[in-house]
Length: 342
Image 1 (tube, rainbow, N blue to C red):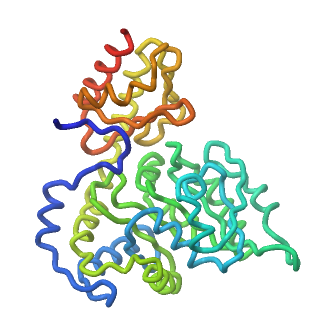
Image 2: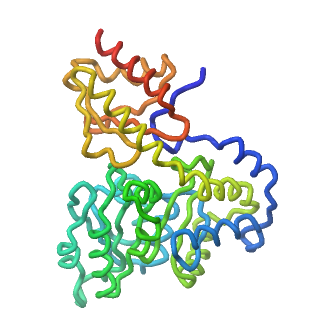
Image 3: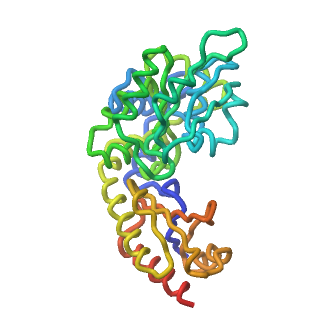
């Protein structure tokens, strides 16, 4: 059975062109720095986001944790939102890998208060840890895009206190698409940025960490320490190049499909869609008012060729991507409507 997979945009498969380029890729040993396809990918990625250098890493979580390890000393404190990916979905890696503590701030759907960040920066005191890093996320994993003005204010605070700012930009091209700006308008408000090649861009594996040359040189050694020194990685890099050169330019289609999906779902009695959160390719909604036993929904939809995740805190999430067409959206909504009507 061919499935319609709405669990995430991480489920995207390589396109035929990617598979062809992967097959033909010229490779070397990337730990020695002589894989020409990875070199091309890193140089292209750095230029694309306006940074001096970039590094190919296995995953987004790896890239974020490597950024913390590279920016911070053990025992440093990192200021970030309490609902961000680094806090909620990276298995406590900050304490294990970088040996830092996280000072979380309550966010307003991903937006951090610059004045609160300023108030939490540690003074010089023998009892205090040092504030080593500020982290922000855009697009946020809640589906919203953070305004550039907010990022700009936070970055200015970092510069004033000589504290680097790292951007978890896993879906940064979705953010730039929503804002209608070149991606460099987003990344100019941070010192380092991580972005994924495998979230909605169809590459099978990999993310990029970018920053200054000095930062990336240090991160390269940290990548080796963390076990991320891959050998003939160019087979993966070939797909990543297509992700950045071509797939980033079509994300508006995914955003439009998410809005269409939200509109169709909202017409089903009892479903409440969070339209204010549909900035990119994610649709959050709940079906508690339908009276349907939600525990059975995942398995029943699976039997009908649809993969979804169970609700988190009562909220469901459907994610559109390259392989989700308008026709598939209609099938999903019609199937769901038929189930709920029973």
